Image 1 (tube, helix red, strand yellow):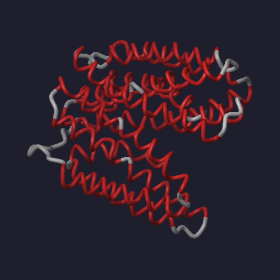
Image 2 (tube, rainbow, N blue to C red):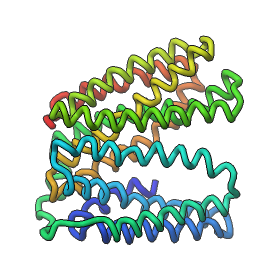
Image 3 (cartoon, one colour):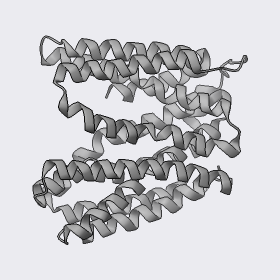
Image 4 (cartoon, rainbow, N blue to C red):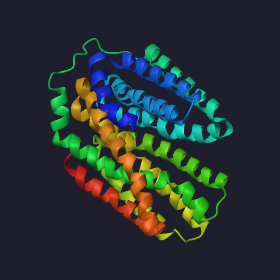
Length: 326
């Protein structure tokens, strides 16, 4: 929830002060909060420190995205931001492999160390253009631009499907299909690897086409079809269900880099931090409530009904973003 309230301010700060300062301050503060969480005296302090860590760590979204916008031409940005977006599945994979073997305190300190390394890398490696004055109309433009709203809301519908699969595949396979926790986690790891490949490939595909929206919509249709198969196969053989989960899970994560790129390009280089911050705020809001609603739906109906509804969401998202011209 901390990220939800800080993403747009971090985006505006990136446009005004630059990527290096935002990365250093944001990730440094995040590391300090995670280290404090490792030694929290009680649950209340733990929640507070983690909330502050989330708010501070959100700085990386706009800062890293804006940096890539400045470094690469339009014909290269899809691939570049696709590679950047693989940090999420790669980070999830590393966490899944490492954190279960650490204690709570060691786990928080491990994460804090990586945040410090990220902040240091930003300071040393990021190069900024000399001109970096935030246009006065940036905030007004960000909140009023119809295409940015449509892109953000459409992406939010895609995210519902992503969270339904990524957030619940281990629980479903373990509790409903009696797969071991280790085997179910391996399925999730396979999804993350497949997603990383698709994010890079999708970015390059958008560069070749010269469009971000066309690939996003086509990936949405593919995600809907694969998720519908998951719903149909919930009671099928695991030999059939697991590959379908991996296919649908990877596709459900494939669009993120393209949506990120589209938001930045709608704004242009000087306002890209604000646009990315706004879009990520919308996605963060959806991410806060979608898992709860999906779980309630499954509890009230069935897993099949839950995944079937999740399959509809990318179709609705593709309809919403059809007029976004990037």
